Image 1: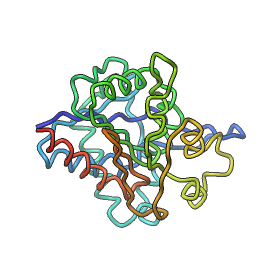
Image 2 (image 1 turned 120 degrees about the horizontal axis):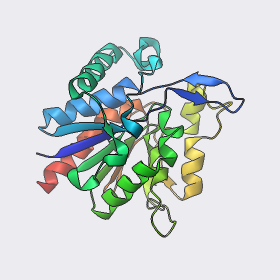
Image 3 (image 1 turned 120 degrees about the vertical axis):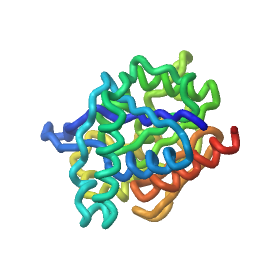
Image 4 (image 1 turned 90 degrees about the horizontal axis):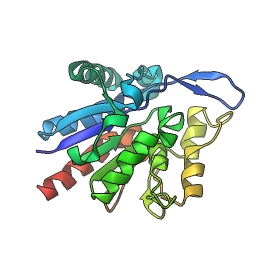
Length: 233
């Protein structure tokens, strides 16, 4: 079976355009649903973040009115998985060659730190060079922006990407006062953005890159990663 690295943000707050601080953290479903499906498929799953910092839970993802009726199960699974794993790996020490897939969940953290993290950029450039599977969901695609090659070019330029949309950001209430919006920045970098209906599952596969639009896309994204890993076995 394969080995998968889930890379989490280390951010617990998102500084807004006016300087106010918005509490953030990992989105439970985006960690739990992929982890559950990866383990069920027999894969080994590691966790890493910048500095090995354990990001807090985004409490919005524990609210059934926001995150749906299954959110309590996702919260419990994510907390247990992270507890069982123990201290997170330091992203700066990770070798992409040790993994068959790299997966980036969301929450707003990636737009705080991962989009510009040099350690993640190194890992993603190396993983793409080796044709490893790279997955990202919701705000996770913002982390792909870190992958700038030695020639100064973004390695995912021209790729088809699904990501949390500006419309969804507006519906969630976080578009106004955002320092920048993920969809805008990805498009400016050269991504070929495609989208489905707001808050409905939508996953794109482009070469070794698999991306999902929102929390509801987390499970389908994991299914796509598992299919690709099975095809490489």
